[in-house]
Image 1: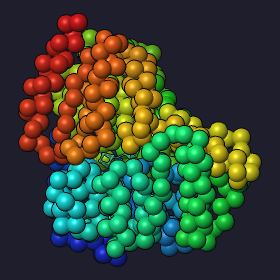
Image 2: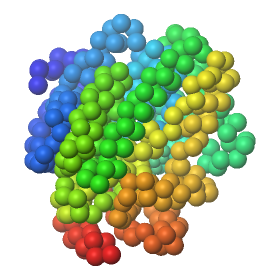
Image 3: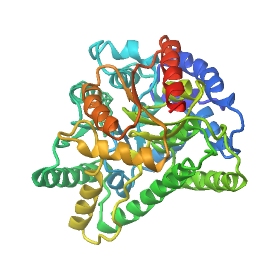
Image 4: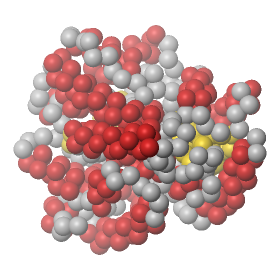
Length: 425
Ligand code: BJ8
């Protein structure tokens, strides 16, 4: 990797601590990713992105900022990127997936907090993530209690905008969210000095729909009876989608899909055809949280899809492109974003329908229900999901785990027993 020390210094990064982070990632990535057999060639681009994770993309963001563009950091798939792009700003997903950031996080949020929140807090206050430091504004949302309180802490460190996401899906909630999109548009105009016109939102919508379609195409290849790509690699691509340049991301993902489709034609896959197929459902997995997928795929199964925000929730619904007025855009964005079935909603039966539909679409053999500790909403929904899946005769196991690797062996043992059980069905 080129020397980015000066760039990091200009972002006020704690270089000493940051060096510790940079020292562990290559080995960690190497063990988890580079030892996979029969990887598609097209993964080279994504390997490169990871190798330059705090380098090239940060340099690109710095260059954009020199040209007067703004950078906005987000934490949830409910933030409409269409508005960010239409304001000529770049959007980066900031959720953090390593316990490296927990000690710093614990200085400002309670110890008994969701690992995702603790890591995000640590990345910001410990000054060890150049993505956080590149942002001109962070955008939070009112999804769970932990996040809501995090924004209050963050406000002491950085400009913040919080989108008030309703917790129900009644007509008045749709109207409320539509108004929140309008308010967000005004805040983005204030930040960037760029007028967000209907035409600009149309252009941004088309680009983001292309990104969603590229990811849909990628995930469709996983429906094959012999998936041409591992679940781990597919997860990585979705994680990268949150911060890569969108145009380049679409191009590279499409190129990879050409290769994957050719593999399917030739009957080439990553695992053998009788490998148990797993649908993972639950809380999002931020970079570099590859733990569960790694354990699953080294314990005799393959992940074929994720009902998560770092999976199909990110791209399965497109925005209607027919709008020509601002009001039509707000309406179309509202309709698209409110389709997401996050556990922060009540009731949230649509999520159960999604899990059953995805299980069938991807010909899965079982569901691994994943929750991060202290995520009450996702943990609480397990009971109703389990009950609904039992009626459909769908096997499910719940795994609650944080970012640490101490319990990996225990999880492996439980999963191996589960995979054996579903293989004998
Ligand atoms: S739409 S899943 S990205 S809120 S931070 S809720 S894990 S306790 S992330 Fe999420 Fe938006 Fe929903 Fe998706 Fe639980 Fe942790 Fe809260 Fe979390």
